[in-house]
Length: 127
Image (tube, rainbow, N blue to C red; front, side):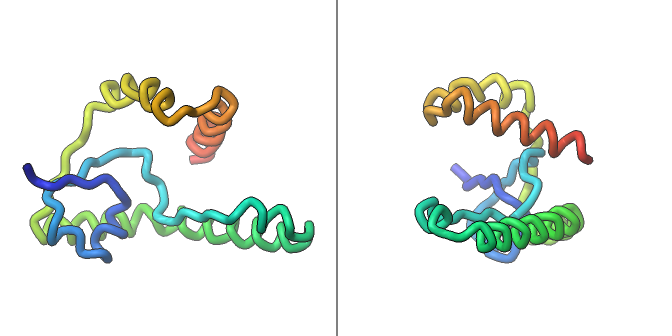
């Protein structure tokens, strides 16, 4: 069985995944290649001023990232294809039909799921 991947193409190209991965899915949910995490205890221990600096900085980084993401994805996809990677488009309806089971297995709470869905709606409507 050949290897498959699902991640931003810019990361895949810069990490040279084309050397070991043969197929990539064209899933439209990937919209950036930046992900940030911070220990909640550390964050809660910060002053309001420190929290604002962190939040404002991350907001600026995310805006910049969203701005360049599409072009980097397209360029990296071409480079990956030049190196032998093949792309396929999954059946989105079939994918969405599986999501309730995913939420169940991951033990998403109704509130968490609702928050994620609301943020995605807000993001999509801003495009």
